[in-house]
Length: 344
Length: 167
Image 1 (tube, one colour):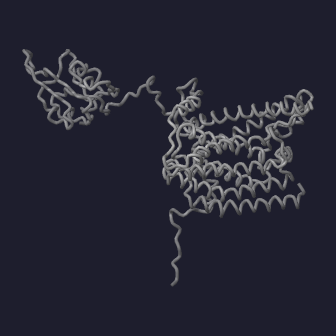
Image 2 (cartoon, chains in turn brown, purple):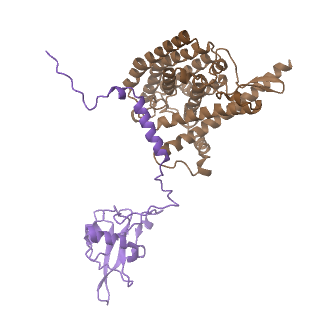
Image 3 (cartoon, helix red, strand yellow):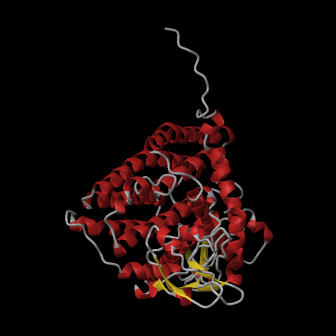
């Protein structure tokens, strides 16, 4: 009985910590997006609110809270309100299955550093991220505006073409780990056996698909400002808009965490066990390594956004179907060959 | 029937370019280099932009080094002004230069900073200054009289040098 309560307490603490960290990450990701964009264009960026502008995200949220919430007359009110909620829900739930550290022993209990250690975690992530597209499509459809509708349709078309190559790239990872559990996948990449090194093609296809999944440039066609005003969120304002805005950044964090888990060895630091450090320090270093990898990938997301132009819609489709899809199949064959020949 | 051999056009991509990845890496390295370069931003209220002599800011009247205004109230500036922003009324004095502007007003809400007044002035008396911070809270405030227009010559020497060289 006491084990049961201990599990509940540990889970609640983990949930609170993760949600807190995730909210702050998202808030500061917005800040860093603006900073990186400024640096890439030889500007300074926000530097007025607080020391070097560090309070800027809170000022932004405060401003959005005070804005008028406009609902268009021709919109479907219920779905219009529901869509940003779906977006936020999906964005913040997915993190439950991402392991951010190894198992630790706290007060005599073995605690895995993951909120929910479920044995089909990867499928859970895939299912939820696909659900995220509904938020955008429903937002586009319910707004009663042609720009929103076009954005929503683009989003679903984009999802269909990139989800496939994403799934097949994950197939390569699953072949090696022989498990859908995120922790098992991380453990299968011990030493330098990172999936990014063993199957670079799969890594690249997954990375590109992740960009498309999160609607980030160069694949941000659902919101393409020059053509579609604001795309799916044209008719959104106030906190509903902020919901979409924050969920985009939360999705980026999830995508980065997923890439770290599946391809960059998760929390592991290669050969750290050879140094003979105390166990507590090792765990701290490993959690630090996970955060470092996550932040590096997030920077990469921002960096790419401010370097590359947007794809044209037909280019996006032909890239998804004619390049990414075959490449991810080639990757599966490559991994299968590796297993056959070298017996990894 | 025979098809002409298709020439490679300038816009056709080579195989390496079609792979995207080398080109993407090029682009990324370019933006990364730019992140490390010095910034262009002026932090405005603290750090002000000082324009070069070619800048056309608020028109001012020149006050010579002996404290006299140069303007002889000929009214040419007022005639040439396309926005009808200048109003001049001439007066007489006992000095060597008999005429002087009794009233000289520029409506800064009308001024379009074209610099025609400066170009037409035979006495080099009206000059475009470097002053660009022009904000008013009422319409009356926007009408600049002689008190605001007269500026010592030392402050606008840059512009005068520029005009003498290029006008």
